[in-house]
Amino acid sequence: MAEADGLAGLIQFRQANAEALPFADASYDCVYSVTVFEECDAGRAIAETLRVVRPGGRVGLVVRALDMRQWWNLALPEAILRKVEAPPHSVAPLGVADRSLYRRMREAGFVDLVCFPSMVTLDRPGGPIWRNREDHILSLLSPDELAVWHAERDRAEAEGLLFMAHPLHCAVGTKPGPAVG
Image (cartoon, rainbow, N blue to C red; front, side, top):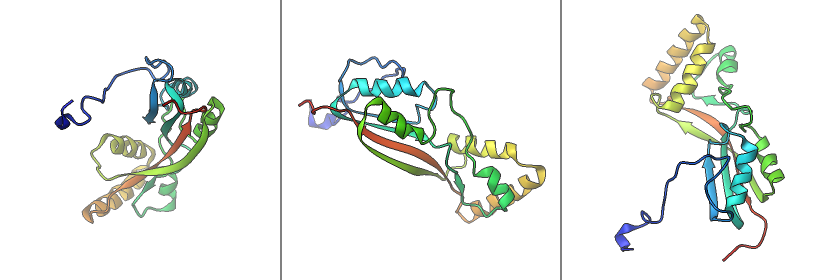
């Protein structure tokens, strides 16, 4: 491969079902997933990541954290804050979107778990994640509360300080066994 090709020839993108990955056992050194396991049978999908990673390989999983509050950089009354801080509860019946991710990875057989809740900050009000979250909030507010929301939102946007953050649960685990060279 020519030096100019960089990693382009080494990286492949494939669409697949997280519950039945089309890869041989122990095929990868690392597996990484961001906000997928909320939408499937998380137990099966976690088991699949363990199956396809080599002994000594690592798996990193990130899921939305519905058990933690989202945060908006808006000065709102307490009654409105109670409504807007709860994230939208969008998770499939067998999905994972809470701290049980950590226990599930341990129970699946991962060792040396590093678990860390985190926040992702959004500052593009037109973006799809922002729209999903703000549209959910707008559906919860009364007409009087909507007026307060819009006034505070407009003020923050005019000041260049309109942003929000929502929580994620993140974990990295290692498949037991000696690393395969």
